[in-house]
Length: 152
Image (cartoon, rainbow, N blue to C red; front, side):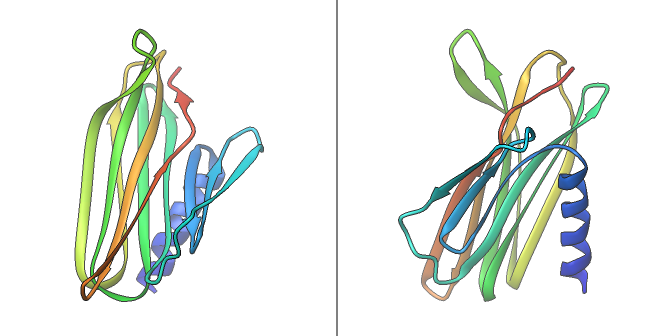
């Protein structure tokens, strides 16, 4: 029940406004606000890592909320999500890490994480995320990044 409530809360935030990246099984999706969706296929097959996602939402007044989750097919020895808030540096044409949060659990199949930050208006931001599930000696990892948002 706790997983369902957490998922519905995250889904509501994403559908309200924001930018997200999510995946399921062998497929990785990148969601873009304008209704334009890009689908990228991964080359690896996941045995335990079932679903993952990350979002960035601009709340206004220089506040962004970043969030993400990782889900495994079965109870994992450990499950992990890491979210990195990045700011675009136009001088170097690179994404620069601003804030990093992460969490892990043992003997669980789902983890979620969210945090609000104050950012400088007028810049582009995105979330780069790392999702990992370990069952016994098998570790599976996927990476995603959201599309960029501009803090106005």
